[in-house]
Image: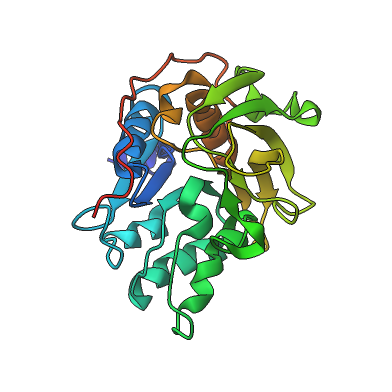
Length: 278
């Protein structure tokens, strides 16, 4: 009996299996079908890249500006990815996003997240209209600091910024490619000077005099969080392998994981552009 007790006392504990990181996608953008494209990316992460995911969406549809159920899951997230446009969430839901930002955990955003919120002037939550600036180093809302675009009939030629050619996020990304999305103007003031510009965009068939603008960058925000942001995100952009590859690489980088040495292949993302349909 003593030998048996001794064996239990000195046996080594079973090592805990490290849980896969959790990536939470938050969607609600009126126009670009993020609630359809993001789940396809999430499924690819789960299938091929050893990541757990959770996708939460505006309820009951993409036009519902005042409710995104399930934001409390951000308390468990290792990475939060936002694709939002002009939401007006209640304080109790904003609190979960605020907590996440203050945690210093990494953040990622697509396109209209530059103007994720649209509270009226004088509203107690009006400060959230500058969410893009706080979280991602983008302009503080649509129309602010010259933030605009070059017309829906235009598209964008994208090239790797020469000084970023060896950045791990760009591993396997084509040095130049074309996307359907119309170029967002963020310059001259954004992204911040201490950001690292990865990709530049040139407007094709612009409706006004156009300048080249960054379309993807990394940064460390004031909460100390690693940031990746791209102004790309039209659903047809996601059909193309360069944006798919960029997205998967960026997620790994934000999670502190090595960028995959082997690309698992192009995803089947075929989501039509719907525009803003009320």
